[in-house]
Length: 65
Image (cartoon, rainbow, N blue to C red):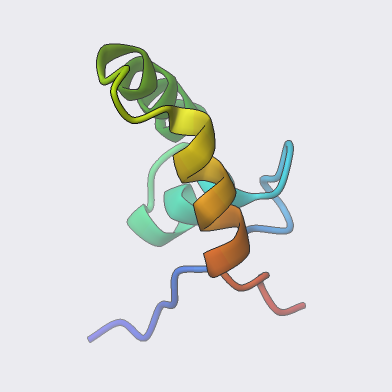
């Protein structure tokens, strides 16, 4: 069983490393995760994606060096 922890990425960060951290955790491309996030944010206008991103930014710990 893998002992991976969901945390913000230091390698794949554009703003805060949130999407890069999710991509690392899932083993996906950071570009695909960002694209999926933008598409879902546009589709579900009732819950603004920027608010979800900010909440994840504060809740996810930064990746250790």
